[in-house]
Amino acid sequence: MIEEITVTINSKEVKIPSGITLLQLSKEYQKDYRFPIILASVNNIYRELSYVINDPCGIVFYDLNSKIGNRSHIAGLTFLLLVAVKDIFGLNANIKVMHSLDKGIYIETSFPLTETILKSIARKVLNLVDMDMAITKVSVERLSAIKYFESVNDLAKAKIMQYNTNTYITLYRIGNYYNYFYHQMPPSTGCLKDFKLTYLNDNGFVLQFPTVYSNNQIKPYVHHENMFKVFKECRDWTKLMKIETIADLNEVVSKGKIADLIRIDETLQSNRLLGVAKEIVKHKKTKKIILLAGPSSSGKTTTTTKLCMYLRSFGLNPKMISMDDYFVERDETPLNDKGEKDYECFEAVDNTLLSKQIKSLLKGEEIIAPVYDFKAGKKEFIKKMTLDNNDILLIEGIHALNPKVLKDIPAENKFKIYLSALTELNIDNHNRFPTTDNRLLRRIIRDNRTRGYSVSATLASWGNVRIGEEKYIFPYQDEADVTINTALIYELGVLKTYVEPLLYSVDEESLYYEEAKRLLNILRLILPIPSESIPADSIIREFIGGSCFHD
Image 1: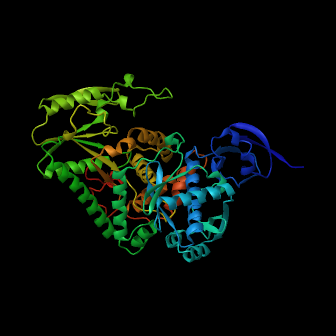
Image 2: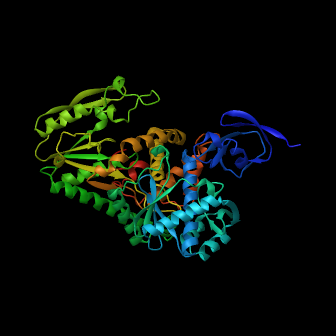
Image 3: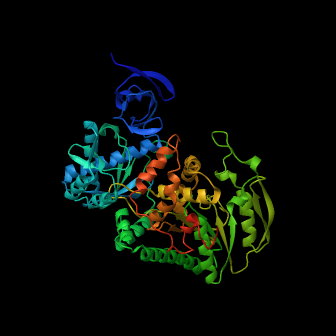
């Protein structure tokens, strides 16, 4: 007789046979999900569906309409694309996952690409989906895995595995193809039917998929040329430096040459900002207002301060306004769908007052600008301001690039800057280090250092931060006259030194344990980089401390 055990599935207590797999169990609950169930958590620990249930526990199933499910879906699609490409073009054909682009991922091919060829790849992927091939987990010795990837000419993956100290490594197999991924995988190819491939150029395309930020739909692709150009410039520079992956960075560290790389990268960063300052100065007679926006932890404070310094060196006198000082009174703040005050929405700012005061400044009139008292939840009008001939006004805020902001002021009077930390390094050809994770690591360190927040507290708030960015910042990135990448090629090694001990503080019982563990699993591949050679005016100092601009 089969023993029964009591478990809780999606908050409901049920009895199930001992020894049943999550995959078998998930079939009874698939009707409650819009997309195929991909993963599950067992007592808050993420498990693939091959996991066997033998003891009482709490189980939650996930489809791609979840952060963890979405990551698994993308990893599965990447592997499936690689299998399709090798089936069509041979074992030497390859793809390289580059970076995010309009709710999708930009991927380059090792062979010339046309729209017709891309359609044939898409058909092959769909054929593999219809075959519902198992995605099998295989444990092999690390040295054997390195030899395998060297034999199939995947040298980037072989190289990064030199920094994995585990005796055994988990690979995934589809048919006769093996690969390594840093996320749990779907049980089979049949789960991966929701995707779209969009042709971009003669060796690049965009892999699109449903996300929570697109209402779980695949929307028509919108090309963001400014962002694409900045990413390309960064990638071209990494190629020039011969540092395209984390393993390449590790090699620089292990050879004792990291101080030189830090100096080169910081010089490049300063030169980029100096170039922006020169562009503003060239149009100083008309461009009297500089608008700056960027997502959380993109280095806005340091970048804005350094930009002001450069502008002063050209004889201009920058004056600062924060859009946060123009919040409406707290009792007038709009409510979100949950009935909570929404401080991130556009209507939370008194844009009528902002526009009126900026118009007065441009006319040469004096204003009394507000300073927002966050404790009292109201504006205090105490800051007298005027704009003289050599004065230039910098306005910083999450809505700064929204065309509704200062819409009555002519475009020729405004210069818009978008800041973002666009991570330049991948882990290997098929595993990227997301820009979002880079910013999250920055924020964990700064929150703990300056506010005393725990890692769990930062992770708990990160979801709402990301929703706000998707709604109020990212849609307006194309409004910018210039985009500045604030990521540093060496920074992951520095961030590791500061954030790794903090991540270990997350208890196994915490809801955020799995997220902390995911970050730790990636960070362990990165060699630590000491901060001694980092200059006091570096963007990274805004997060780790020691900045000459602020505490």
